[in-house]
Image (cartoon, rainbow, N blue to C red):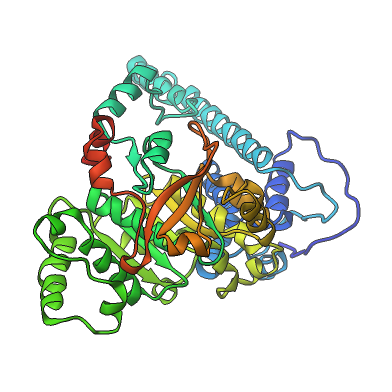
Amino acid sequence: MEKQGPVTQDFEPIPIDEPVHRIRKVFTYVFCSPEDVMKKRAVLERLNAQLPECIETMFADKLLEGIQNSGGILPYDYMVDNYGFNHTITRNDPVPTYAEVMDHIKLAGQEARRSRVASDLMEISGDLGKVSDDEIRERIRETSSKLTVHTDFKPQPTGKEIYEQRREQSIGMLTGISETIDRMIFGLEKGTLLTVLGFVGSFKTMTCLNIMYNNVVGTGHNMAFFTLEVPRDLLIFQLLSRHSYHPKWREKGFGNVPTNDIRKGQLTPEQEDFIFNMVEPDLLNNPEHGKFYIFEENDVDGYDKVHFEQKLASFPVKIDGLIIDYIQLFEYLPHEPSVARLKCPTDYYVRQISELAKDCNGHRINLIVAAQSNRDGYRRAVEQEGMFDLLALSDSHELERSSYYVLSCYADEARRNDNQMITALLKNRGGPISDSTVTVPAHPEFSMVGHDLQEYVGNSPDLSHMMFSVEP
C-alpha cells in the first residue's frame, strides 16, 4: 500500500453513496475539526462497532490506542507513516459535524450488515436440495434477524413509571444553604452541573464544603471533593469544626470548636477529646452518614473524564457527587499539547466534567463546581446589593451553557462582620429562579454557611422525604 499524507489540491467529487466518501468524512472530522477528544473517541468506537471487518476500522483501532496512550488524537502524518492509509484527507474538504459523521457511520454499518446478509442468502441458496427444508427455514430466520439494526432496544419508560419511581425515591441532593433555594430546586437532578459563583472572599469554597457536608451527614450521599486551592489538611480541619457545630452536640452541652484552633494545634485537652473521640468518629463512622473523600492535583494522572472516572472508581463506595474547587484553576494545570493550544482550556474541561456527570462508571452523578466571577460581574453585583447575573460567567461560555443550576455567593466586609452571606439562584432549568437575594448565616470561624439543614428539613415533610432516601 502506498503511503500518502495530506494534500491540499482539489479532488474529483465522489458520489455520496460510496463507502470511501463516508470514511473520508469520518477522518476529516477526526483530524481537522476543533479538539474534542471525547466526541472523536465516540466516533471511532462507533466505527469499530459498526464495521468490524474493514481496513478503516483497523486504522481507527490505532487511533483509539493513541488516545489511550497519549490522551489526544495522533497526527495524520504519523498514522500514515506508521500504519499506512489508502484514503487522502484533504485540508479543503469541509469539516462535517459530529451528527453528520455519526449518520455516515450508521449508514455504512447498515450497508455492511445488508452485504453480509446477502452473502449468507447466497450460501443458503447453494445448499438448496442438500439439507432439509426445516434447516433452510431456520437459517433464513437467523439471517433475517441480522437485518435488525438495534438488537438491544429497551422500551422507553412511561411518564407514570418515571413518576412512581421518583415518588418512592430521592429526587436528588439538597444544598443545605437556604430552605428557599432548596424549595426552588427541590433536589439536584442527577447528571447535572451546579455552578457556585462568587468573587474572591465570598465564601465559595465554604459553600461547596457545606454542600458536601450537608449531603454526607444530612442525606447520606457519598461525596468526593477535588481541591485545587485549599490544602486537603485544612479542608479536613474545616469539616471537623463544621461537624462540631451540629445541633446534637449543643443538645449535649458541648461547645463549637473554631477551625483555626484545630489548624494551629491549640486545642485544650477537653477540646481534643471532644473533636477526636466524639466529633471525628461520628463524622466518619455514623451509619446514617455517607462517605467523603478529598483529593488534590497530584492524586490524579489527568483532568479529563477518563481520569476522573478512574479516580472515583478507586474509592471503596459508589460516588454520588463530585465537587471541584475551583474550575478556572484548571487553566494553570499541566495540559496535553492539544488542550494547551485552545483559546479557553476551561471550556474544554467543563465539557469533560459535564460528560462525567452524565456517565460516571455507568451511573449519573451530581457535579458541583466553584467558579470565580469576572470583575465586571462582581462590579454589577456590588451595584445591585449582591445580586449577580449570568454575565459574570462570560469568560467561559461553556460553563454558563452547561450549568443546570447557578448559585451565587456574595459577602462584602459589612456582611462578613455580621456573619452573613447573600445568595441567589440565578439559573434553574427545572424550575423558578430567584427574583431577589436571600441572606443566610455565615460563620467562617466554624466553616459553616447556610441555615441548619437538619432543622429546616425536619420541619418540612416534603423535604425530609428526600433527606433520608438516597438514589440507588
